[in-house]
Length: 248
Image 1: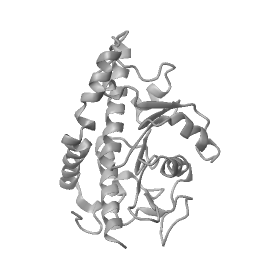
Image 2: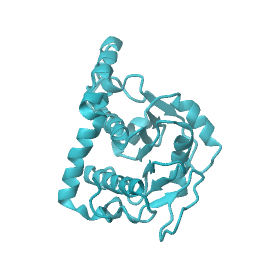
Image 3: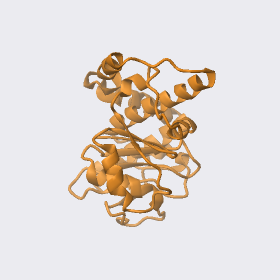
Image 4: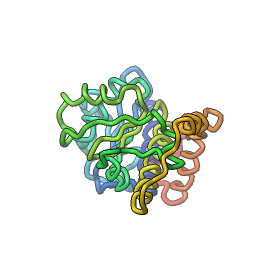
């Protein structure tokens, strides 16, 4: 196993523990995938049957872009999960890390005809960054892939109608920043709707907020500082995900 793969395994395992810490879990379902650096374009995914709190660097499953398991693995993976992720890994150059959640707020907004409302501090940072894709059922059919890519249209996140949220990026930090802001925007929107009609933000201000967001600013690590802080928290809680020892 290469150093690059061990590092990727540790990074992805930490992401699963972070999601678990944040409550972004759905029993044994949903996925975060990460491409291993190298010409083979292999991808790591969680073993199907384990909770996020049980994922470790060692038990992550390595697969190729066609979904074939590489090497030996005691665990299988969820085909319904990887079908969508594989489309992004194959067709979106920046999709090195892909994240998918079924948070209550995320699905609630995905079920709204209006979708995401540009009426709060968080959604204002995502202006013209969120795509939509109509619900076609459980994602196990490859022919949906071309329609998904068409729906994405170059944006870094998507609301899967009636389903949930997805975010991706050229690094895990970028993917996480995008998904965190999107999910937080959905949480605030759900609370706002419970109280009445939300006050929409002007397009001029939306453009300014999106351009000024620290989460996407290289000066602030494009989300890496946030991810590092969360990694320190999960390391204090339970560092057992680092099956190969700490990789710096």
